[in-house]
Amino acid sequence: MELLKSLYEIHSPSGNEKKLKRFIKRWVANNIEGVVCTWDNAGNVYFTKGESETYPVVVAHLDQVQKAHAKDFKAVVTEDIIFGYSPSEKEYQGLGADDKNGLWIALKCLQTFDVIKVAFFVGEEMGCVGSSKCDMNFFAD
Image (cartoon, rainbow, N blue to C red; front, top):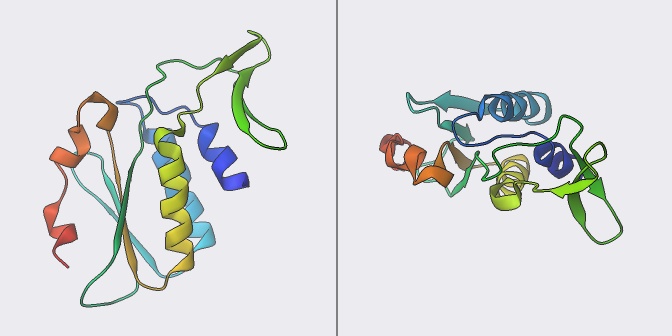
């Protein structure tokens, strides 16, 4: 659950996904052995684990709809839910759960399975920016 909470707490509006990409690359490097990371000119990130003739692929996107978050934004965990909150503004704020839930699932799959590919796209909330410019060779196998 800590990984999911960490993902929620990184603000990543469309066009500004760098901090989230750095976090994910560092998390993968520190927690999963044998993963190759590549990226394309659009800013999409690709991970490959294991060697195989064919791979399952999990895809998610890095950006979120919320354009702004308070500097003290936190993901608050209760018994049943996680919600975004700013203590200074005393208001709820969006988590970017679409698609940080997908990022979390993809990272957990990357951690669990011996053979898998994972792709993370940029700019999807602006109209499939990253996926329309993705490296299709990554999906050849």
